[in-house]
Image (tube, rainbow, N blue to C red; front, side):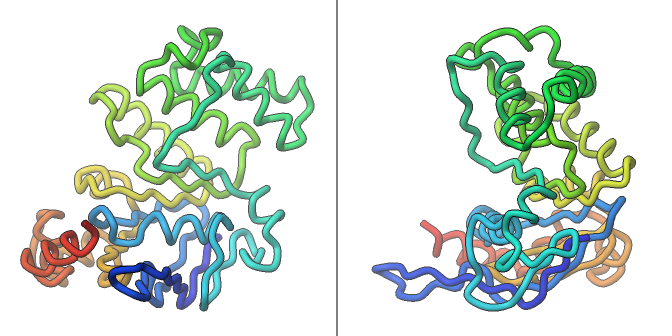
Length: 255
């Protein structure tokens, strides 16, 4: 389980002074559940996820992952988490198989277990056609599938996907969304961050809308539809953040 309580992160900016990138955010995600974090670019999604994954330290508040505190038990949290960041970086001279194997060894896996896990992931993500090709020759979709496989090679209980379909073609995006659903069905705890309304609507058991660093709305899709008297996720989102003018102002602040 992931439990986040009053999580806050500030940064210093020369023009704006102290910026509250994440402001007193609280939510929880249970095993066998996909929690969707929905927000515009710059809303605070990635900063929140990086704190949960121990890549950033909060200035206040707390977060626990699989029972471990992100500030006190960083190594145990990282062992329990697979974190797919929005920016993908692969070693171009390695093949996809070598890349996944390398990260399996970093996670302390035996070679036999890695070989079996590579086979499983290649089946699930349809990677066999390029598994033994070098990463520097990959399309964007191939790179993303390889990144997902290397992130999840150790079969973590908690999975965090930050904009996993960004820039992908329709068929590759569908394959990744299907894979995320399978993770949920296998009892994984999943956080899925996106600004694609349709993905959040189809995938997520609970949805948190983050705006200007704050969690401004949370609930199941049906709860949000009732609260805002709208059936369309885009309309719900605009109402939750305070209207189109408020959304435009927040985006302008990031530029």
